[in-house]
Image 1 (spheres, chains in turn purple, brown):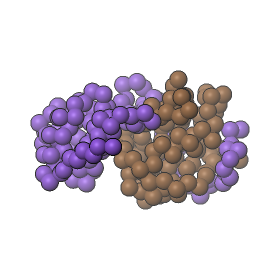
Image 2: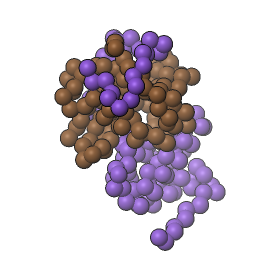
Image 3: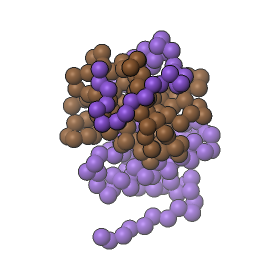
Image 4: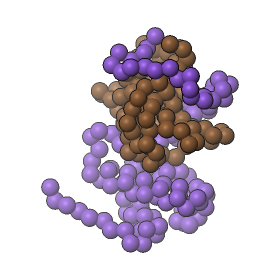
Length: 118
Length: 98
């Protein structure tokens, strides 16, 4: 049993949970290497990486709030779907800050970018 | 305790205030020697404050894949879920990548 030694475990009987069949299918599908998955900033991310991550997040939030599908947002921004997917999955190593800024400005016309010296 | 264990947390994911993590015991089958509930709870904390799109939606469940999640010089993958109108995050699978 891998129950936590630091936190109190409770019964989860009150949670409605996906069927085992559905979970098995999802695990298999999502474990495939061709399913991109979303990246998380590493603990030693640079200021530029954090900036790019934030821009990706703003674009993702726009998509969610507007209800646009990924393909529709890609068309709006004039980019292909694979690039759109990279943005929405935070693949910042593949993305330029210049292009991300352009996309963010297109979606948020009043957006401001600040630089603060430490 | 049975197939799933529930722990209290205080997180915000996709602008939702999450109050519990539910961990499915499935990960123990293949990955129990390198990960446990304590590590998973620490990894889930790394999602705090983030906005992430699901990879798949089936009915009221949204399924997510997040990686790499860095913890103590190790890197992990998390397959997790949110249920519509509920305040828990479910962990369907978790394992160490390096």
